[in-house]
Image (cartoon, rainbow, N blue to C red):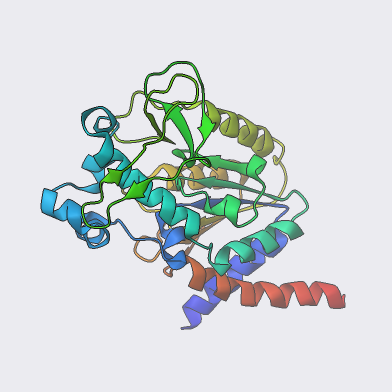
Length: 287
């Protein structure tokens, strides 16, 4: 459709003209890498049928209380996700975003609610990533012994494929030996150690402050309205800096005035924009 083509062209022009990119991403960014879509209980239970039998939803499982009440249930859920994220290869859309970012005079920053570490695995600078809900690649002590955060790298959690309960040894704090948990902000979570995310947000605020008066494009991928943290950040930055907002979302592409809505999956939309972006880049090279 001509309207879709016009939007891709407008998106490519905004990126081409930008001095810097703010890349924001929600759960929809990972779907094209093969990660499950947890939208609604049915989508979650298709990925984890054992939890359907127990009547446990994503929201009820993503609770810190399970680490006290039933650690093997808790680590069955998060251990499976840890293994899944470790073996998942970021889709080509990540490489497209990196290529665009490399061409911008002031580079790019990533703000994401995803805890899967896919942007780091795709080669983005870890010092220019803000993970507002934490990251599964870092752990914290459930006893709050003062150990701070520590990497999940040394730990592998064995998970029963039928019951999704953890078997064998569970991750423990290297300081005191108490049970460890992922450094992820869960529902009803008053024990989350936000120190790492706070440091990321402080660096991001400094970077955003340096962009006043510069041309900025916000590229948002797969962020829905159910938990609007990412969408709110995208809109706030676009408004504050007078930048274009490219909202890529299959179901909810709408946004405030000036938004370029793209009702596609992340990979399909990024590829379509990249075709138009390449035309503009080649034009610059000829001149």
